[in-house]
Length: 129
Image (cartoon, rainbow, N blue to C red; front, side, top):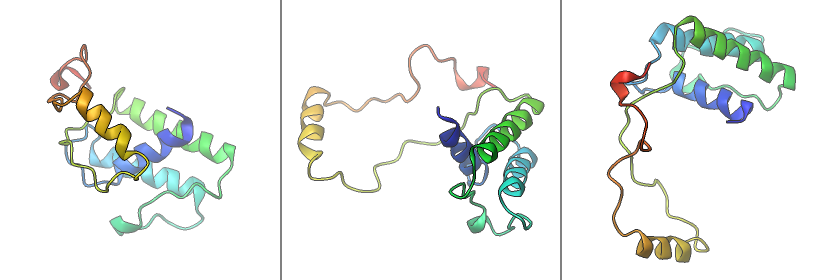
């Protein structure tokens, strides 16, 4: 996963309402607060709706600092793999008209929806940390 995508993804998970993630609340808060401090001059917002990292004005150095911060906090907490149990949801919007023919053809090739999300060979969630 590219560094920018990783930083944005982890910060979004850490500020989400997902209760089943294997990152304790203090670690989640520390990840966001420290990354926020690297990007902004003021203190991190307390309102959950405002706890979003905006890296558009940042530099490569800012991104590297956020990446290092996230990795070190996760490593310090003994977390080597992020996990959460969230049921698969239906798409929130329709596909574009140009994509519909392809989607319909794929639906004909694979008419049954898979009932598993994890790829084969992945250990069960209880074995992960």
